[in-house]
Length: 83
Image (cartoon, rainbow, N blue to C red):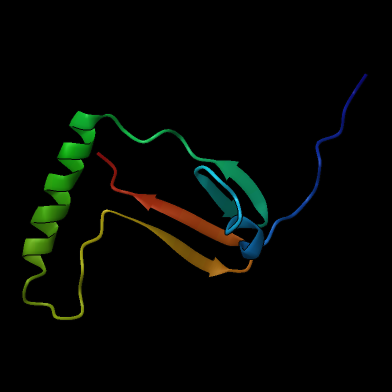
C-alpha cells in the first residue's frame, strides 16, 4: 500500500510551541541534527571569541554563537557555528 506524505504547512507561531530542535522552511518542519560534541563546541567558541575580538571597533557588530533567524511567517533557520 502506497502512503502519500502529508502536505501540512506550519507557521512561525506553530514553531514557537514545538519542543526539540527544528527548522521551518517554506512551512515544512525539518528536524535539526544533534549538537556537535564537546571538542567541536570548544573550537566553535574559539572562532566566535576571535570574531568578537575582531569586531571590537564596530559598535553595531556582534558575534553570536547560535541564533534563530526568522525570514517570514513560514521560514526560520537555526544558525550554528560550523566547525
